[in-house]
Length: 254
Length: 229
Image (cartoon, rainbow over all chains, first blue to last red; front, top):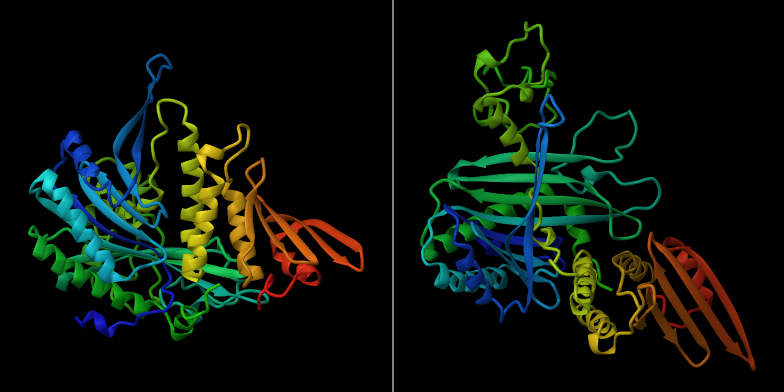
């Protein structure tokens, strides 16, 4: 695959969130996870507990025999910087490093992951990894005057519906692309979303690349595969947008 | 041609178009639609949807389809409600954190210096040591309206920020002769008051409207820089 240097560097990339995640084969002891998250305190001063709500209903012929159960369970830790742009999430089976906009670039983001991965591994020790993932959630904001926009002029990954029956007022597309050469699956989710900007149509382009086959286990191999996955994600992104969309990413800031 | 490629029936009984609008290759063998022939019985009296049946094959199909849908973003994973009522510090942190995460949705358009200044002002407004009992922290619906107003007005002169007792953000600009105050309400509503002093007299104007109309209404009352190009 082409080197990352060949891909465009946008002035204002449309990335709303970038994520690197590692999933372990088996759960880590909750106490060990708690100890590991404390190692991240200096980089991420703010801590919040993550919760999971489980609801179970048993339906029976008789109302007497029907049961319901409701449990709220602490399942992990969320650490964040004061500006909330950098987030680290530790759960018993995973570590996830997230960067919200403004995006700082792959070099800084991947370095942060390596730093945090090293800190966490220092506590958990070696754990067999069953999945690594790179996910970029982009949002393309298309200004419009008048009735609307032709999404197809900005995006190639979009919904295709017959013409002549009225305008599209919403859509959502989920697709899975198997990239056998790098043993990865790319999950694409794209669709119109409410825009945070006035007079804009916003479209999400969520690219989630995961590897569950032949998963690297050493730090060096993990770094290498993350670079490969990021390159492939970039290539897919560039193929999903048009030049008209690229021009949007150079708009002046306020 | 594979029996389950384009032109076949999918599990829900809807015919896939035989003239796909996409030119990409559809990998039938590995798709969620691939299934042993025995599971497709078009002559069955019952028209139960595939997922209603038991068995690992059906669960696999359901699982694959679920996997296609987007996983929640890490930034949106739910955090725990504390066993006790939140402290004031926790409540103020939640409010400022929510505003900063909202800002990240448009941060690619914001000047980095101004973003830092907005955050600094928000943190200052929520200083626990200076908090008035009974006041409400910043409401995210109000902050959302504020962000939209920024993009409409595009001011080069940054306003001072304040907070109403109800948790609505307030932006204010002042000059020797003009004053403009905007209160940002939920649901893209704004309430503004403007004044112009001239020849010993002060003229006031006020209104409540949707944020999309703000720019046109304010232009007569704004100094240079309060409303950008």
